[in-house]
Amino acid sequence: MRILITAGPTREYLDDVRYLSNASSGRMGYALAADAVAKGHEVVLVTGAVDITPPNGCDVRSVQTTDEMRNACEAAFPECDGVIAAAAVCDYKPLHRVTGKIAKTGGPITIEMIETDDVLAGLGRQKRNRWIVGFALEASNSRENALQKLRAKNCDVVVLNDPSAIGSLTNSVELIDATGQPIESWKGTKEKVAQALICWIEKHLSPRN
Ligand code: CTP
Figure 1: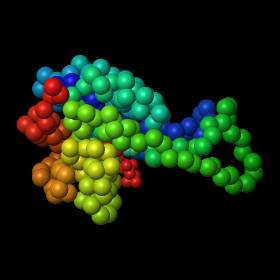
Figure 2 (figure 1 turned 120 degrees about the vertical axis):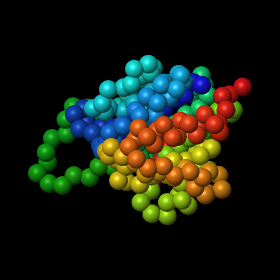
Figure 3 (figure 1 turned 90 degrees about the horizontal axis):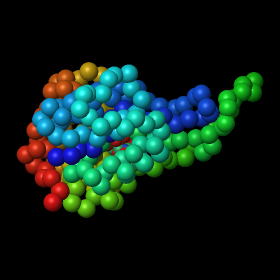
């Protein structure tokens, strides 16, 4: 199959030198890309800025902002059989990006933030005969929230994990289907969890026809 994988954090710039982001290492998405390539799949890896090297054999599209990630994904998705959205996408961005550098004022400042576009929901709207595997990072009401995201983003399944996954070498996940129930659970290094997820996808999700 040809698989689109998103990985790493996005950045939202306040000015030309400062940004808001998160602590995502990109390891989960990169482990998925490595295992998918090892199993003979073609991988388009749309990645935010991370400190690790992309696996050999991927078509790597590097992005920084959520808008760039959305554009790269929307360009790649039509030629893919499915997407695995492991990226930790910023939910908000500053309403205005200042050209140059914001100077100190001597007092507090307020930055007005607006929601970013939801990259995965956008792919969900153009899904057709493709499959979609989302991630859900939940601190509470986890399965209910994961099911809501599955529906809102038109996913086949959602990989549910918790905030301890961010920046970690390991992960503990449940795979939630459209009934809201966990149909699999995997724990261990991100490489091990990635191998289990790619195996599951090969067994249960089909190439587009
Ligand atoms: N996602 C995305 N674009 C966004 C936000 C999230 O593509 N702007 C994707 C993530 O890559 C993940 C899924 O949507 O596959 C769920 O991300 P998560 O951060 O758990 O949830 P949010 O939809 O951002 O909702 P909230 O932060 O309110 O829990």
